[in-house]
Length: 115
Image (tube, rainbow, N blue to C red; front, side):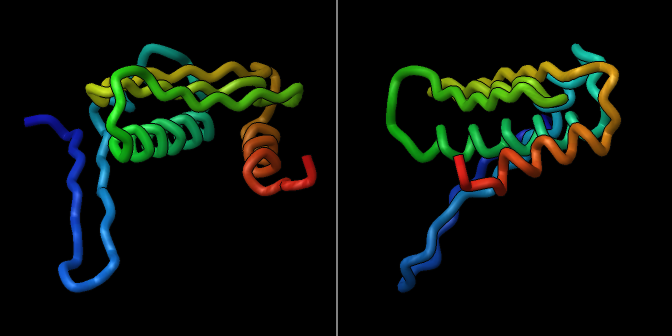
């Protein structure tokens, strides 16, 4: 039994629908191929999960890619998901950066709306 799952739901009689996704096995396979610090495990896992949620919402034949780039300590995050919901992910970072520096870089990407 796989520890990855995608479950759609709808509340009948209400305008509420959604999806639950669990990617434990897939994310672990990606992360174990690299020597990522724990903060990148978390950030890349969240990005891969978001990519699967978005990809599962569209009917298409192809690949959805989400990419972040920076000149800071967390230089790049890439998450890809194809129409079969197969995922790939990659992170590039300054290996001398502390966990806090990496976390602050991602926080800046996520919440700074001035750019």
